[in-house]
Image 1 (cartoon, helix red, strand yellow):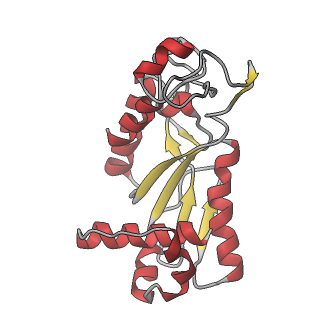
Image 2: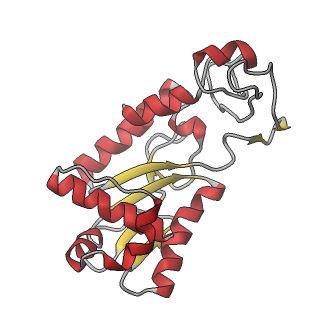
Length: 211
């Protein structure tokens, strides 16, 4: 949870100064050395960490840090229209304008099929970003909160499946709901499609973030 706040502060510093910030896990223990002026800036921001199930742990972590250190206030929201601008606490939620099946409303639970496994999902996320830009609230940062996407699916259970990867000597699991080849396990790249019969891979997720 400290790590999350540290990352938010460094992100604010980077975006406002356009300078390179290099941070690893060792900076987490220095969270209480963050200048107050940067904390005050973060308290004006809205961060959307979208996902389902386990993804709520991101918000829970921020809340627990606030519980033990009041210098890091956060307002966590799980439904409704996202809160507007404020100066007293970071706004954390999973709000997204639209999903794969509900394109024109605020939703707080999305999964891989709403973000990166298909072209419709990619367009929905772009539309969400544009909606926030045009109508608000202003979105400072957004990320996909992973749940059990990479290791489990409700339909076929736990993996792994397919042929053994000749490079990493493992088999793959996961779920690509609404993917072009169906809801199947996925590998790291297109070369793994022959092993699992799925053209969607981790590269699709990486590309979705870069887009």
